Image 1 (cartoon, each protein chain N blue to C red):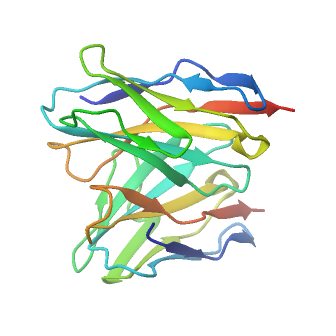
Image 2: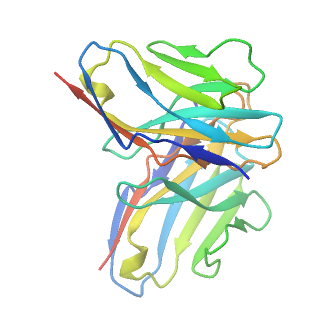
Length: 115
Length: 118
């Protein structure tokens, strides 16, 4: 069974500071992908970053980086230099090689950037 | 990234009527599309997997006769909520996999459709 856990229902960060959003997962698949999506109040899901289970290096995309610790089964999202526009819901998701096309989503973390 | 559109973006209907929501992949072909439902302040719940040219695969607890899915082409999937009731009011989001060479296995989401049933 696949499971994604996000333990932080809400987070606050000062503008220009860095913030880490936690995500842990559980899977029996030997190969899997981990994703982070941003959902602003408008509702659209915006793809941020991807990490493959066999990738040797942590993924980075601009101000987003993924702190991937395979042994701990964690895939935390780090947002550097937070901006007011970063205020949104953030969802961690996983797709396993043996689960077809299905994504499993965490419960989300609401991030608020304070000016 | 790839673009997925949804129409309409919001709809209000009377109880008992049917509502059709369209999901289109605009710049890539999608043999598989997904339909999710999201309640306020909650995560996305997968309703069904829509496969081009074949029947959709529904998740446990989702009534296939109530939520009709048609995936007639490689760029279009439709979700029809039949005989809608107030409890069907929700945010419905579709997504599609782009296998054209971008980030592996990424699903791209439509902007969502907010359904309100009076």
